[in-house]
Image (tube, rainbow, N blue to C red):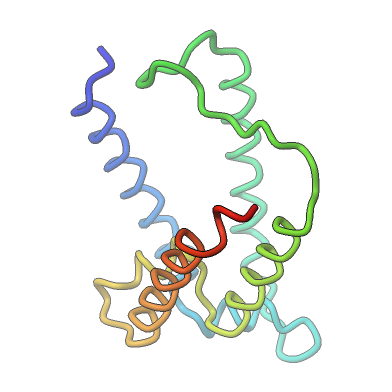
Length: 143
């Protein structure tokens, strides 16, 4: 049965597994992430295994999704339909990468690190929320 409760329970479970994986892999430590991104300095290649594991899990998940006639907990699939590379995509990707490199966080790990009390994660999440609001109010309608 596709109820809001079952969808919420599945989302809570998936979020908990995702947060645990981020913690276990070291993605909650901004210095480790910045070390991975510093390919010309003190490069820390350990997160390659995290990225590789994520690609493998996503690939397997997509194989299953493509074979399904309908989703388990929703009325229909919500798959991206846009296939072109345009300026908003490139600019957004660049902004994401710059923020990840400077802050050592991307949205998932920053949210997962909030309960740990890292001051940087609080600053990052506040800036991220402000950026989302600015985008929704001033940019999204112009795209």
